Length: 379
Image (cartoon, rainbow, N blue to C red; front, top):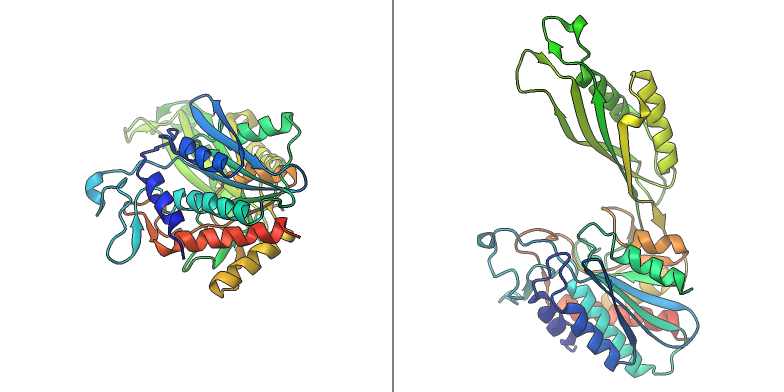
């Protein structure tokens, strides 16, 4: 098997593209895609670099989506190798920030597209790339903005493969067919400060807030379904008090999050919380809300079938569909009606020091990607 994808992955990893920096990754990729017959557009929104590239004239559009930015590597002394050296060690591991999340996937996508275009120059349908340097950051001027840009131009994605690291134990064993929604809340409860010996002269904001939080923690949101686990609620931050033992806090703040399945929505969760706020004497407007993304899922279709066949043909594995984990940029693409799947390398070291994947997996992933594209676009 060729190691073209591995070599490209190493070149990308060697570029310190800490979000929102791209460090020239998309320029390199754009040149490769242009040579393969893609029309390439570089889109700069705010401080974010994005790339849109498409090959083919008409028919269904299959898009590879991914990001070239990475999270900061942290202290260099925590790494066995320089985090941007893209070292392949004696045990056959590719080491470096972005090895798993997700420069190896991007490299595999590019090489898969090059091979597919060379083998099928007159292919049916269209093959595209959507890359951003904003996935690990605020995710405002990246994929979200590109999708708005595509919408204005009437360009619709039919199938999308997101290169997020999805595999658990071995390449291809798990594919993400959807993701839970993520809803964030920030509560700021105003009471009245006072002396702990005179509680009747004060209004303990922390007591009211913790009573609400305990109620929400105890609430049974739903049972999930065959694709999604039950909705979960977690308190992540709690701030209150002056630091003194004898002062009743007049203000209390908390931050919390729901990871929710399609049985819930932003509106249903907010409606429940507002009812419980009333029960605890808390004004509903004491909570600020931020929706990171709604739940989405591809339950069946041509992309799932082509992906199952490609993984089995390359690895002999019967892949498992999952919706576990956090959010991804698929949340910006799925609402347009596209079939969306996430397929990438092992995710056991993402965002850690000594991030790594098996070096051989990069070109094996490229072969899987090429087979998926062939299965979808070639009659």
